[in-house]
Image 1 (tube, one colour):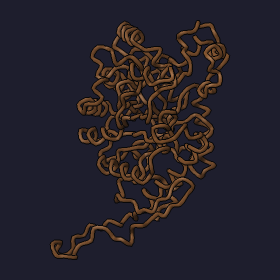
Image 2 (image 1 turned 90 degrees about the vertical axis):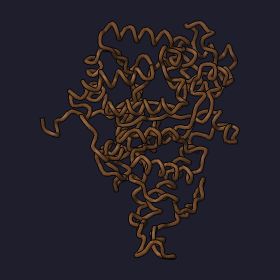
Image 3 (image 1 turned 135 degrees about the vertical axis):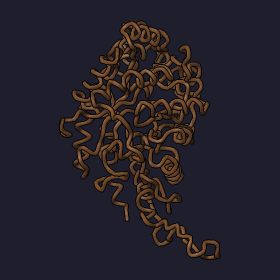
Length: 460
């Protein structure tokens, strides 16, 4: 088989969050599920070792900065069920996981809306140094009303302003990461006798530069406090399906996290916009959240599926979706509009995003994303890998964030049953390349952003 006809390889990430209940709500209660151990380092070390044993590219860690308090007008339902609360910082578990692995990457979610860019730039550079170039940043703008109130605001920042702020945030970071320190600024020359006063040069001051950024949202003098890390700028992930998001992803993203039936359209629009922005259509990869339930026999798969579904929380999904009315108290054949009117909540801000003319039952089914949709499969390894190949070849994706139903059974099943079949078909590499950065692995290029990326304009 020639290189041009070789099958597309799968970008393989594990989808995680530093909390007890991420996206499969209610399943932390399953026997032998370790989700409630998220606050223990042993959980993260086991997860990292297991993911690397299966050739995973990265652990992709989600995050939110507030509680889900729209459903029931209170955080109480989210707290009762552990819906992404309690919730710890995603960055702090990375050094520990990096210490027990050699190749596994880490995607860290961080918001551009509430914290200044200068301190974040140093934290990410530090992680890039400590991991030897194995980190990426999932760029988000935050969406929970409670998050805004946690940072002194009365309400969410309007969407257009959030995106404008994010664009400037990225420019500030590019100036710090790419332009503040020249490649050869660090000399590390102890001199003829490093013990003599005044001898030795660690950094050439002439090659370290202030950025003197003054914009609509930020004023940052610089210089950056960290010396250049292996990737300088971490791998850039953006999650989007909206027109504003597509525009920002086309300019900045190396990997787009998207989903739903519009994946092909989002991919086509993003690639076209990337070309218009002076980049290549191939500069952007697309990954989706995917659910995989597998076993050695059909009976084993059916047993797992039944057990998982019977433990799932319907209310938890409504809390996570921030549905602004008590959907479970209404007849399933009542329309969403009628239910909102009955509760006097038709003018609630959260109602604007709901399809008003479907039934309450249809709405409840539509938030049940963990058990269906384009990127869900339950079956034996051959069935699962057939479907993953269809996603790659027909849906046009490049990779998945594997949703967890059970920790560590979901990951262990995938590593033991699915990865060998993916490797047999040439969809997952047989081994890691020693010393490879996350960017090199995901893009096939070098450790730094290519010259076509807008960040490159800040290099000296």
